[in-house]
Amino acid sequence: MWPLKKKPEKRRKSKATPVKRPVKRGAKQAQSLVRRRRLSLFFRVSGLLAGAAAVVSSIYIWKSGLLQEWTLEARDTVDREIANAGFMVGEVRITGQKNTDIKQIRTALALYDGQSIVSLNLPEILGRVEALPWVKQATIIRKLPDALDVTITEHEAAAIWQENSAVFLVDQDGEVITDEGLEKFGGVPYIVGAGANENLASLLALKALYPDLFSRVKSAVWVGQRRWDLNFHNGIKIKLPEKETGLAWQLLYEYESNQKILAKDILIIDLRQHGKTILRLTPQEAERRRLLKNAGAKEESI
View (cartoon, rainbow, N blue to C red):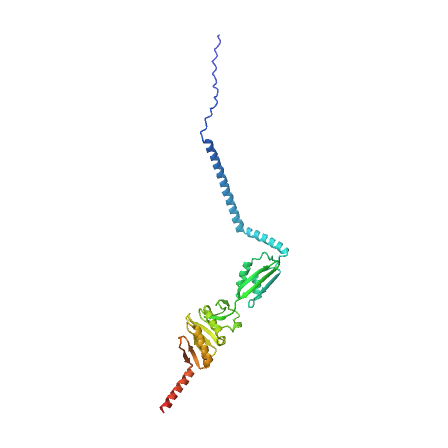
């Protein structure tokens, strides 16, 4: 036998070392830009999620009342500490009130025992005090460590105003004060009619001009939104003009001073026409004068 020829071994192909391809210019910058964009997007999304969570939590806390409860608890704690330090409302001095009930003022102040004087909301308290019927203006001053000064300026009653069946007390500006306790103010003028309160100033000017004469006026009626009729206690009516009211009032004063016209049997004195006075007599006086006139005519005929 002959020796068998060995098959020639196949050469193993050696793995070739991969050749690195050259990186294109700007590729690294592009990859870095992509990474930065992805990171920025991550932070933006995270921020939005965190913000949304914060908003949802805030809405829940607000809706549930927890925020108000925490705030009140914190405020009360601070108030107690301040009050314990000696800044507690101890003395309240109220001056200037005449017609306002002191109990109404205390209710409007709404103070409680142990309240810190520093925590007082003065504008809010002032608003409640000035909302009281008689209070025209008020000042509230905090005097540390423990005093509160409340000064009241009240409306001045100027007239009782009737419109239809409603009756009010008004001040000199025509502003309504109250509709209670009117029986105490019988000395002020009684005015009647829509808009009478808004035109009160012209009537008060007549009162200031001749107060004694005006004291005899029982009521004043605002007529036609333009002028006054004065009703005197003895039943005589004075019709004043729309303009130059003061001159007509002065003329009436002269009539009364020189002729005692208000003591005569007259129903109406019409002063609406400048330079002309029209008198309307009572029926009795008119009949008496008619009879006297007829009797005089008969005597002349005889």
